[in-house]
Amino acid sequence: MDPLRRSFSPCSSRPSSPRTPPCEASDSVGIEAVLDQLKIKAMKMGFEFNIMVVGQSGLGKSTMVNTLFKSKVWKSSLPGLGTPMPQTLQLHSVTHVIEEKGVKLKLTVTDTPGFGDQINNDKCWDPILGYINEQYERYLQEEILITRQRHIPDTRVHCCVYFVPPTGHCLRPLDIEFLQRLCRTVNVVPVIARADSLTIEEREAFRSRIQEDLRNHCIDVYPQKCFDEDINDRILNSKIRERIPFAVVGADREHMVNGRCVLGRKTKWGIVEAPTSKT
Ligand SMILES: Nc1nc2c(ncn2[C@@H]2O[C@H](COP(=O)(O)OP(=O)(O)OP(=O)(O)O)[C@@H](O)[C@H]2O)c(=O)[nH]1
Ligand SMILES: [Mg+2]
Image (tube, rainbow, N blue to C red; front, side, top):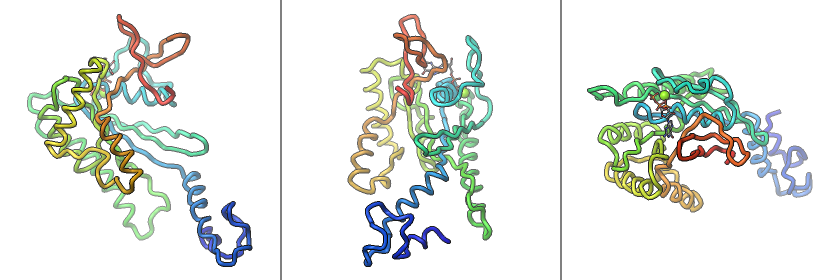
């Protein structure tokens, strides 16, 4: 029987909300059980989340991908000790299924080659925008089929993390152009790359200048106004907007700090710890 139909039957005792005693309230049709059922179904199915990292060459995009995976799941395929991170030459994705308290998340991170190395950087956004649009198109083509799959694999990019070089000045014309194009296509989260190279004061001043540049050039990054659906969303989103662009430090080596094994960057002056989901 259709699980939704069953919940609308007045005398159905299971599944029902714990608040509704079975077969007692004759005016209740058990609509509130739908929420529980949807939750159980969504937990069983899991969620898909696809992130893409974009930015100029050498800003630490691949390292950040490793930081993300190493902190959670990725233990292999890392370059050996002392081996420098190879330059990314083509777009590629890594997928991991992460499970927390019974909720499954299929996380895919797409690493992209850095841009900005050429004398003429015109259209350096084309391969990245092409890939993003191709995924939308692929999903749409599956969705419009009359006999479509029950579950369409979702390769659309849900979030694009854009790495801003830590110049300490303002957004460069190339970043402005790239960001303007990206924002029209995908949710963009700008981050200050290699943030360990800035002092706290420099970082705050740089963040304010970038926020100003984003406003002045109509670059509508995540969370856009359309996500302010209710008062709670508005409060949360305004807090996020104050902190954007986030400052990031990537590392894929582990070090011992006060008897704790941490991911970090060892320098002559100490260890810069890369924040992970565990810390
Ligand atoms: N200081 C500092 N260096 C970093 C950070 N993240 C990465 N690096 C170093 O920067 C260099 C380049 O890092 P990658 O991760 O290869 O940079 P990328 O953006 O993927 O470069 P492309 O593949 O050329 O686009 C490496 O030597 C990293 O160790 C960081 O947060 N701070
Ligand atoms: Mg790379």
